[in-house]
Image (cartoon, rainbow, N blue to C red; front, side, top):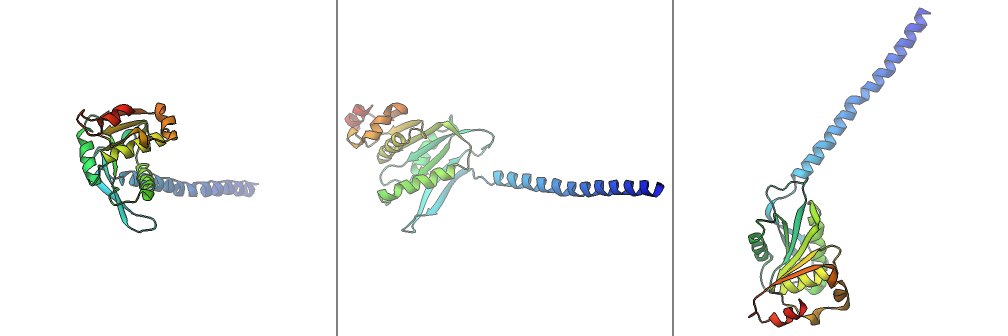
Length: 212
């Protein structure tokens, strides 16, 4: 009986050892997962930088310009300023303009460069840049599209075609008129906030005045 009792005790002890044997492995696995997550968060770029991708079909390198607060914190949510440059201006120029007004907003800025780009490829640029922005914590209620001159027309078109994504449009002397609006844009015009900044001597003032 004593032998049988000892045998059972040994059996129980053996099972406990087998269970405990896996605990260090589980703990190590969790530690590795946490470390990887922390590493990925740390790899998110901040400051001013450029993202380049290969355009489908042509293989040309296309770029969009980013500006992310240097103190970016993934536990917070940031406004998004998606800004288009004027005709003949590099995407980096509109980024510089947006940074002047960004001091109080502390937004993440994304500026596509569509110089020498056919209109059929603009949607790919939008997709590439907005997909990249998904790497950051964006306040969905503060996604604004803006643009200067030619870029202003792109801002109004993109915003009015996607009112569920963008919550506001800001045109900076936008080169746009009501003739450029299609039925879908008119249908969505009440679903998004709009503003323009231009002087009354702007050549396009009357057209923008009719729109607003």
